Amino acid sequence: MITTIKIPEKRMPILIGSNGETKRKIEAATHTKISVGSEIEIKGEALNRLDAENIIKAIGRGFSPDKSLELLEEDKILYIIQLPENSENIKSRIIGTNGKARRNLERLTKTYVSVYGKTVSIIGSYENAEAAKNAIEKFISGSTHKNVYRFLESRKM
Image 1 (cartoon, rainbow, N blue to C red):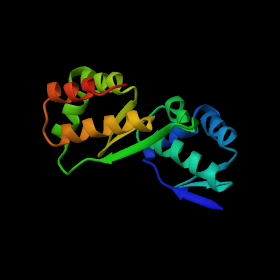
Image 2: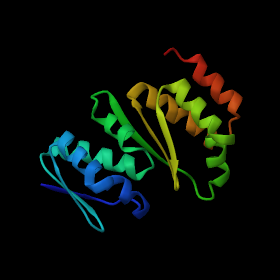
Image 3: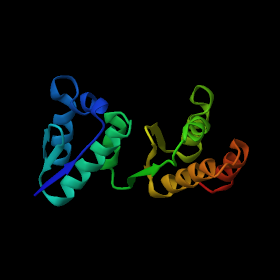
């Protein structure tokens, strides 16, 4: 079977890596064959294709290949949250001054967060990624940083 996906053209060089190194690393880790053109084709067994697809989507959403490969761990998931139209202000609130808000969000939830294009993506364990998703939804709905951090600190980790 073959799975076909698209990622932003700007992220293609990161997916391929220096001399194809990243692509080969993903292929070896997922036991798949990846062809990169205008679309990305993934050949292999169903579960292996799904693993490769998630890794490639994560790279496409702004994560480094190393962080994306953590999706191979059984307890890790990828959330992609679509931001509303005209979301520059929301993106700025999620990132914060010099990335401080995003770093706090990552620290409090033990996840990785990437703001890229019109999306916010999260890599982490299901429980932690769910908490980060809830925090991002609070930012989108207008909650202050203080209230979002208080919400995150109140949960048991």
